Amino acid sequence: MTSSNTVLITGTSSGIGLAAAVAAAEAGWTAIATMRDTGKAGALLQAAAEAGVADRVQVKRLDVTDAGSITACLDEVIAEHGRLDALVNNAGAAQVGTIEQGSIDDVRAAMEVNFFGVVAATRAALPHLRAARGRVITITSVGGVVGQPFNEAYCAAKFAVEGFMESLAPVAATVGVEVTVVEPGAVASEFVANLGQDLDGVLATAGPYTPALQAYLARTRQSFANAQTPAEAAAPVIEALTAEHPAFRIQTSAWARDFVGVKLADLDGSAVRNLTGPWVR
Picture 1: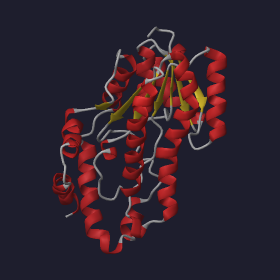
Picture 2: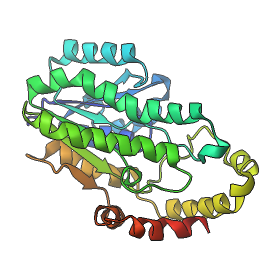
Picture 3: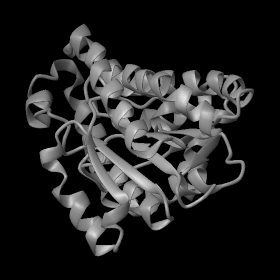
Picture 4: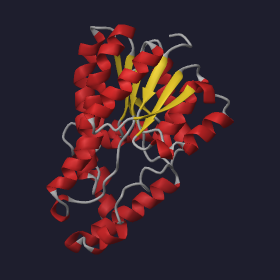
């Protein structure tokens, strides 16, 4: 792939998306850095300027839950650059809770941004990626392989993304499009901070699940204290972007590889239960 190639990345106002946009530009790509609210582009633009790649980072509005927004953004990219060589599906939102204490609408909202948004962006981009013989790279999560307590809706959406991409990969390959999923563990970013949830409020209304939720939150805070940086987690995205033939599944750390490996070798489900059960007691 040449230095004139164009990559569209969703969810770039912070975290992995921001780091991936800057790193892609540093690798010589034109990075179309998208976000729902372009008023939040300040951190990205500052990081791009500090890296000396501001001229290769272009901010555009894109809301993955709005089909019209996706179409308008892609139309602009093709009109301005003539091609799209890669799509990085990064936009997403965490959600903490358990189904008895939540609502079906909460689950639908999690699926809308984390799953249907990925499907919609991928579907819209594929004609352009076919033309360029490009690739789809999707940030999933170790939670897309191992179901985690109090992450039912989030993990369900990420499982769905993994199944969708695993099914799409051989089909897309017949028309020259490579498909990869990138699986981070804990990342020190604004992702969890931007939950839009009052965790103290969730805990106060947890009822019979209070002890389990307290144990889970304590364990989670500890894991995020030892998290990867967004730049570390974004490095495998650039690997997938630039490799001649990237792997379908890439973890972002040795810890993530070990964690996912438990599930991938767990034929009867007991290993995962033994792994995550202590998180809630």
